[in-house]
Image (tube, rainbow over all chains, first blue to last red; front, side, top):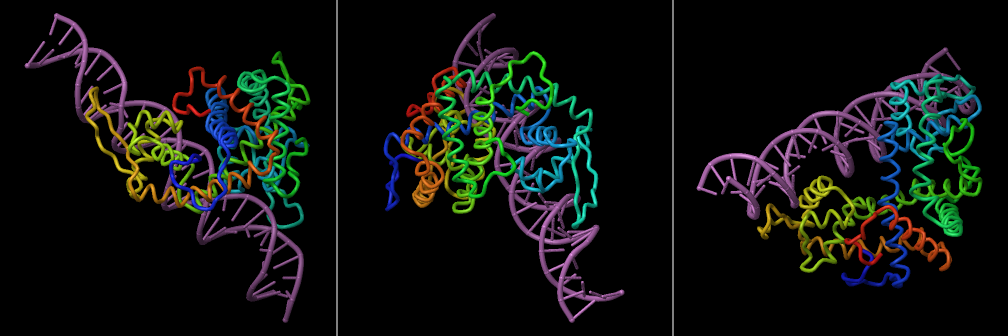
Length: 168
Length: 168
DNA sequence: GAGAGTGACTTGAACGTTCAACTCAAGCTA
DNA sequence: TAGCTTGAGTTGAACGTTCAAGTCACTCTC
């Protein structure tokens, strides 16, 4: 409901142009992520969260990260991550090692050799899909504007610096 | 994995600028929809799919739609819709009526009075959240550019015209 | 007018995510 | 040293989505 069929008390409504842009954005949210997920699921048997977990690990020194850091970097709850790591461990892409690293209970997830190989095998197809659905569809000005808007929105949504993603 | 830690065979890689924009977009996909969902869940006990279903019904003539049309408009599978309608029916926001309308087996979902009232109660908060997280965060030029990019991407992703969403 | 065919739903099992406990390993405090 | 406290991780139940059957109500064909 973003249009005026239902009568609207007090809240500042959207202008037609804003409505149009908002709807396009919402439609994009409902369309693009599922399309990206589908490619990963089909070609790799992974969902995008699992993929991002593997990717984050591959970029980490020693290909290992403490779970709580990994959770922040992959933008998921610790619980979600824990379940995901369990699945990835069962598949052999990752393993867990408790690292008694000073304070409290700390567990590291480490990308296995098999996991790294898997990722190397998957990545090109994923990038190809990113190109096909996004990068190559937009003019470079459009892509730049999209990136700019996305960064602005992220900065507003996440009050503190997105420390997990320095490259943003 | 969009960066070059893992060696990359044959696939055309992304330029640093493209990578930067792509990552921002992916981060946005992981951040904004969950935030929007959370507001709906918290304030209305609905997920965004259910909300879009109610909204689509409220805009329809007679506040009713055949399920297969509604599925297209709300961008979900028929199965997903059927489950959702079952939940919404249990809550009393919607009811089902089989409309023996010529061909085969057709079921209409209709927004009840209670459902309409619910939507009227929910909508302002949702629009407020849309403003808070998106509309008011971007300059009008940024929003326009975002909308433009989104429409371009949608047009490429959905080959045929998005008949359910004439307003895009 | 019986039987095949075809869209339009529905259903149930499997799976991933969330939420609310629960456990575990330290550091404090007395 | 015993007993809190706290941060980190795990676990299981509940719930929504997907996928693969089903079922149902018509039309078409002989």
